[in-house]
Length: 111
Image (cartoon, rainbow, N blue to C red; front, side, top):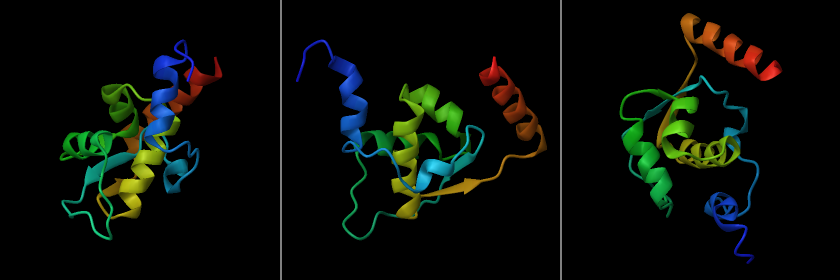
């Protein structure tokens, strides 16, 4: 591994180089909440996933989680997809005010 790559490599190493999961469809304002279920089927959440679970004991948006963890959105979506697949989180729809926020975010991206 090249020393210059440093932290750029690490986030993708967290997800084993995967770029897709069931979390791909998550938008920035989707609300994530821990279900309180225990991991099953041999799944052991990694440290970042444990941190996500501690952050979403009350609902938090994907954008808030990404900001708090300082992870690229693609990496976070894979981690969230794994948690969802194992029943550890639920994903809620954005409310009307969050829908407006989503439109603002999309408008800013277009700039």
